[in-house]
Length: 233
Image: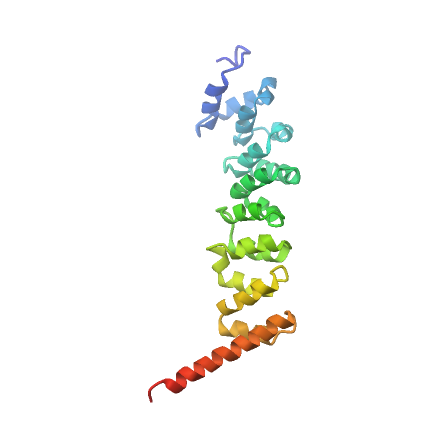
């Protein structure tokens, strides 16, 4: 083998071998001792992702990796849990320095731990990408309403064909101070009557919203009464 002769294998051949599930751990342990490995990000990332990667080597290697490499390390289920967590921490430290395009690309693929950080991003484009992430759940949607103070970002959520139609999201949105009053008033009609009644009696919501809830509640009850009167006896 080339390593036995002190030579450096071809990057392409080594990359293919490291990507195989059957890649022997002894090879990774040998590579971790080769100085030239740190000069190739492709090889370095794959070595760090391997289950047999020495912990000390991974700790030294992670700061050398780019943000996308760190993401791949954190997403790979083969990577030892401690190394995945450390890669995620390193990526969290770098998010503040990423461009909008990079944050948007990251948002589409981010792990659950990273999603929590990206929920407060001030750019609607980034938040919109986050909504398409397979790891995004209704829990994150509700957290976004509670933590992101940018109306543009909240509107992206409410216009989404899936998350913007969830009953729990609508209930939270009407009560959220991050949602513009005009938008909250428009959402009232989408709520069930018990929820509207709760808003009509709540001292915690904006007075205009409370008045609108009362008017809508009265209108619905009048309409229900009129339908009852017109029903055949």
